[in-house]
Image (cartoon, rainbow, N blue to C red):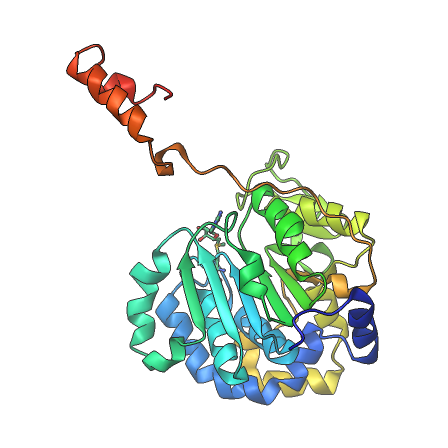
Length: 331
Ligand SMILES: C[S@@+](CC[C@H](N)C(=O)[O-])C[C@H]1O[C@@H](n2cnc3c(N)ncnc32)[C@H](O)[C@@H]1O
């Protein structure tokens, strides 16, 4: 079984195919999307978190997935599960495709899952592994073993996650067909004033994630740190950071736009995307990756050796320390 291919072979394969773009995906998948819409609406209501992913973004992610046909999807940051639902529905329709959805929080399990269970049969969850785990320490080699087409949705914030995506995850997929879609980056050329020139009464963006201040890097407007990391990475590697908004605004003629609006309505068809995508498959390497080191296990998670526990017990017994005081001692 082929589990990886050389970069040269990947480039040849890319060159021989039309690249997957949001506008082509929307158009080619329009009837599949129309079929999904009633369930999509129900699932969106069940998750009830449109602030994290709008209705049209649900459909754009769905269309890209159906068009790219991955055999594994990595959902980085699940929260209440908008993206996890989109990808699970797509995986069910694609057949041999699995979804690995990672988050450290439990809002999916606690808040959304009971509602989603009322809508779909238990078998619908079969492709989904919704794991409560740290993105920074997950075993990606194992996850991608024997996989050939990897779709990554990058929707967890901050420089440390960015270092993990760019320095750990990308090297693991560089010889496979892959696409990385990035949420929370807007194209200022197609967005409102809040994404472009005026500061208003905002101060400078200084590395916050998803606060009100934004940074404008060329035409990329964002409130999250990974915008800086990806501009740096794609610049060093001479890769194109593709704008969904730009592709959507240029990818349809008038008749197609009218047909899309008729089929999907304004809620689900939009020329706005507010996301970007890229792939190393665009060209042959060499590629340059930042160094990534997974965080050390936290002190509380590290088992305390027996000898240290004995010493601790002896000190407590001898009343040399109060239990509270020794919490901070190193053994
Ligand atoms: C913007 S939300 C994701 C939204 C989700 N994709 C959706 O479509 O609704 C970002 C999520 O990333 C998660 N996250 C941040 N750092 C993480 C880490 N190191 N490991 C796992 N999850 C993390 C947060 O807990 C949060 O739920």
